[in-house]
Image (cartoon, rainbow, N blue to C red; front, side, top):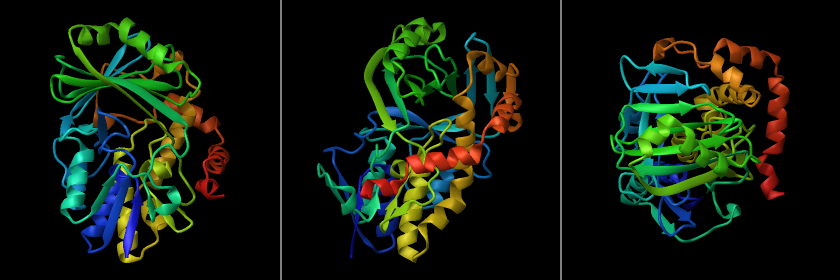
Length: 359
């Protein structure tokens, strides 16, 4: 029996790898003619703090051959006023920076090579409907946040530091970040939950007006722009009409911060495991990361209501070790207490119900 995967992004490829390593036959169909075109060439980050394991080592244990991840040991958070807080690690990376896109160092290309090496069948330039797949790994089924960004080379930055900017003047209901990939390449991007804001205009204004960023980029070379639309959800089920939805297709992204790489890879592994071992897929992913998604959903509801004055209150100290860093500071906890989380979640699930796409 040939298992069909619609979408050859990271989650679809990982599902395929997990299947073929167990002796199954799998074909992944990708509408683009080249791997890594869905999100474009850019730098992303994988969270590595608040875990009792190293995330890259865990991917290896789960059968993925991934290299070229760059450790990040420090985050500098900027309030609208320019006030900063440095969060640093004393014993290991806070994040790993990784490359996306069609570059040979990208996670996308590495996973595609492993899939084919293990015996998987990769069909590029072939668009399939969702109904054609046993596993659905496409993007943009729904939309509730979007991101735009620019990549630069010929910069000179600290390769161990991510910069994080909170300012509703430039990115309402969202944030702007700078991620380095080594010392001479960076991505700067803005992510927002506000689908109606003029984000491209505001983002370009930020690049020109923010003194920290303009100093970094003044002698740099811009190599490309990138952007994507996606949605986050904590679905009641990610199995619809017998099809397993993974990664972005299921809405498996951190609702507050947009992180999705971990959930893309884990959900692909678990979808493959579900088929290989005849285990309920919903039970697997809920045991693995539903709690994290629910926590992120609560944070998103709070962040959507925060003003620049509230952002100032999130900058608590000049420096703080990651082990003492509270992802939910008191000011945000006050917001969350006032929210009807369960009611909001049910409304969310109804709005982004995957069953709608087959009705």
